[in-house]
Length: 102
Image 1 (cartoon, one colour):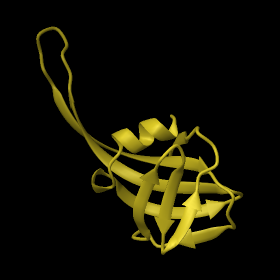
Image 2 (tube, rainbow, N blue to C red):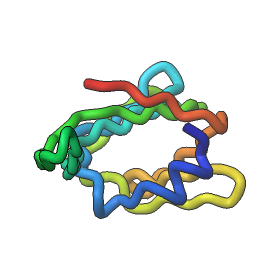
Image 3 (cartoon, helix red, strand yellow):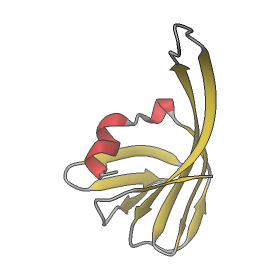
């Protein structure tokens, strides 16, 4: 995923953040989300609510640190992504975001 897509399609209000940490110059944003799925099969319309846990991994130049899950205050984007965590600004240095299931 690209930074632009992330910024335009994910809202902090929709993400239940579980953990935030930086390790080896990578910012890990671990979260859970709920999705509602309508499936259609042979005229039958089953519905499902599913929970899933994922992790966004952003490349940054910052020392290793663990943050409180409520530390994320703001995300800014203007050709570069900036996270504000506990009044620290974390600059993302790569346009690609890795997504991992946890």
